[in-house]
Image (cartoon, rainbow, N blue to C red; front, side, top):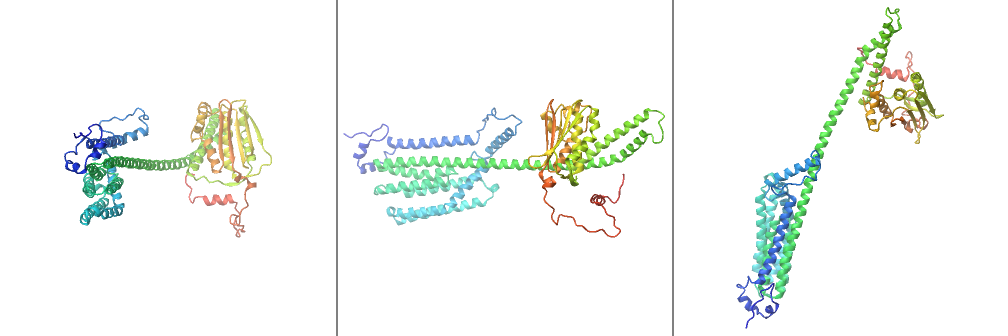
Length: 593
């Protein structure tokens, strides 16, 4: 009594060994869809289903599906540039998805097809060698005529594919029809896979060693096709699936355990290379996306830089215009102010006789004091405008820092005594001279000392210090016991026309130019300006001059730097360097002064 084939799970090994090969050939057409083959087919379909599900997940990861809402709860506030950039990216992705034929950006479609064409061109010689080798070996069991015809057909398909790839690479992006070229490449890969299927589907009955060779060639073809067409998943499927199906069916039709195992290995290899190709496709897509984001970020940075450069240019032009305006207005204001100061001083001094009304003398004094104050303010504005415009030139010479500080102390000593303020001097002995601008250093000291007197309450104290620095330079320090400056207001008081809260409350309000001018003059000398203050304790300003400005540390002048000593011509007056500089700068015509 004949046993029925096993219907559970897989095939029965004892039936396979007892069944003759000729009987299996006679009934092969009727038993293709048996449970054994259905098991293999279900395994292959399961692998393809998992691959398709993974591909869908990848598309959902790179491109949101229509109607999907992104989670904006974890994003920065609405005014943040990051959220605006991500919103713009989401809108751009949605627009590209609507115009794309593969679910990615149109630029990505072009790059993927371009990479596919480049891979095919770079591997053209390898494909030729592979086709020639397999054609020669296949002639051993199919004959020279059949092998030659197959080799010629595959070479024709390969030549057409290479020609189309070159045509695609020569076309510009805006003239390329993505859908048509994708269909061409997939069709050529399908013909390529069918050609390999015909050479590997040999008649049953050849020796068993050919099965191993067929599996090896199939793995080689599938691997090469998966690597070359990884940027086009449908082309990978079209080039490899016919070969795998032909090999698997061929092994199954042999009806031996070894053949079944080889068929399973072929289907498993197809699934492995399919997953590998998908991984390569995902990596390529992620690389293109990262490169696109990098290019977009570089574009935004370049745009921001151009906007910043333009804004900086406008700010510099506005600053130069402001400085020129201030310098011009200061010059125009000095002309009438000199007349006001001169006549008010004459009236205050009663040069032409006493006033009939005694109050007129007091009014004349007030006019003169106001004019002096206005003249000082104009001078400060003019100095600041020159410094900002880069036209302030230092008249450097050898000076004594402690002597200048002492002179400034004597100038403001009466003013400090009227407010009951005590000024202490702490000078180090035997300080060498400095190479600096005496007028600038004097103005620095006067500005700092006058500010200290202005904001120090009655009965307070001020310390003036001059000495060495740790690096070999010299410093000047002005410290008071005033109300101090809040830490957040220090940048304000160092800015032009900036005033702190204590300055606004003070009865002696200024223009807010003393500290900015002093800091700018220190910077011109290459020094440092440090302001330290604590509320209800006091303020200290330390001005440091670099060691290069100390005369004792300066290198001797070379012959090129030293001035030439030539006797003056007969009858020519002997002028000092300052007088020569003034004469060289004197204009030809002077108007309005």
